[in-house]
Length: 170
Image 1 (cartoon, rainbow, N blue to C red):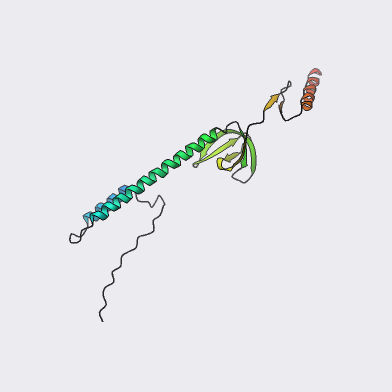
Image 2 (tube, rainbow, N blue to C red):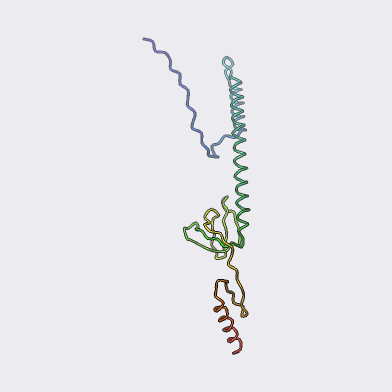
């Protein structure tokens, strides 16, 4: 009983998205040229296959460039939106999981992420902002004390009188 030969072809390794293992178009061209130089003259490589592979690598490179451009535009848009929050009061969750509220003093990009620096010293990632509000208006009394508009007029008058009484006793 004769057994015919079994031909096996190695299977391609699964594609990975890691930048360390990604093949660039230059790498692909080097491999293609090596294949052409070492091809069997009795069984030449199909040129249509090479053109198809070259077209696919070109499309992959274009898609990669487009993804990088979109990521850059998204980061720029987030930075612009965060810049509009300077001077406004925000509330949200810090990276350590603590709730915080403060006025935005600065916007910063760290590790391709936009974060807000608050007047209380906290850093708040833009995606963790839960409330945005106008800052509470403040007024300065005659003695230099800062009061919020939410304080009653009686409290403001009392502070003013205390300030005047304290200033005349010296």
